[in-house]
Image 1 (cartoon, rainbow, N blue to C red):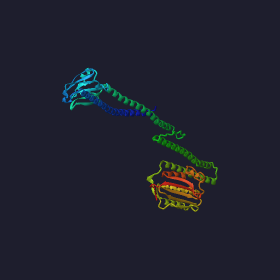
Image 2 (image 1 turned 135 degrees about the vertical axis):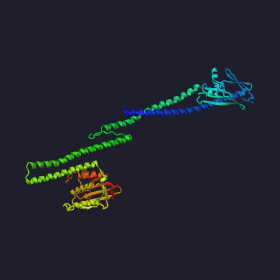
Image 3 (image 1 turned 90 degrees about the horizontal axis):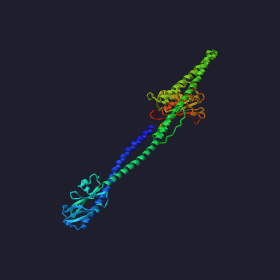
Image 4 (image 1 turned 30 degrees about the vertical axis):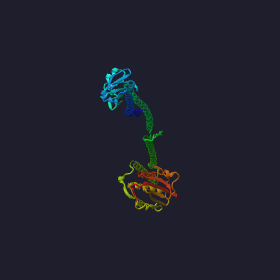
Length: 474
């Protein structure tokens, strides 16, 4: 058994023992009260029966009740084998002993005088009569198991009958109570312990699964993950742990792929630069060819620097998503117009029309450098494939806004729109394959989404969707 299992079992046992002892105490008190009430009713019936029997015997003896004025008119003068001898108003009355023993040998019956002194006691041993002389002695240690019924002859109170539970009966009652209580304790303990074992299995089994799942966590190996169906925090924890693990594996795989692609992308221009540099060193080229080789080296160096800059920029985005301190309220319409101005005198501007359909009063709270990256990269990508027109558009909804850039080029090839945001994916005439990947990373830092598709006319569309929240003002 595991350490946790031992702790669970011990905890349940302690809880069981404490709760059972409390249960025993409550049950014992309740049962004692019930038994006392039941026995007192029974004893009261016995006392009434004996008093009625005494009255009947006195009635049949012919005693003149009018001569009985007080308890002094009654004299007890001994007990024979069959009778208790009384003299009432000068007349002898023999009370059969069967009156006092009719109910049970476990019931003690006392005949008390008016001062509650014991006149007669139904104990078999006469020597024991002298041991009990009063009511208080008779009911001592009887735990309220007694009943008393007064005896009247005419209107004169002459004494009473005191009925108590005998010692044997009291022992039987206690044994009965303890048998029920401790029997209940034993049964409850067995049932509870069985439930403890079942609960231990139900609790520890998913914990063991969770421990096995944790032990096999790896960033580069397939997972043999075990499901936990407990519909509680353990199931939630197992699912969250699985999600975190798979995400870490995905990020690790993406990082490795990123490093491989980066190495490949950096290696290609470096090999070209090295090749031309060695050729120049060895004097392979003439003067004109040497100049062309130097131009190629410069161009490849620029590509290499651009790739390195983009890689470093993406890495910085992964560490620092959105810097609110550097954010400013920027008018997007003005940014597009500034872009149009920058390209007004390029030769491409004469062939490509740039349409700005962004509302003039649209502001976004963003870091200027990031917004410039988004606009510049989207424009460069569209410019690369557009035939005659690039359009910047905007659609506002209640809780989100849509920005999109549309060109009238050939659009995306099959399955290409699912890959354009992957790092180092390059379409025809692409550069380093990081432009749209950078845009995607920035957009996601705004809790936004980005997607690519073809317009109805066939051109490519890049659409950015961001929550309206507090940083989009329109």
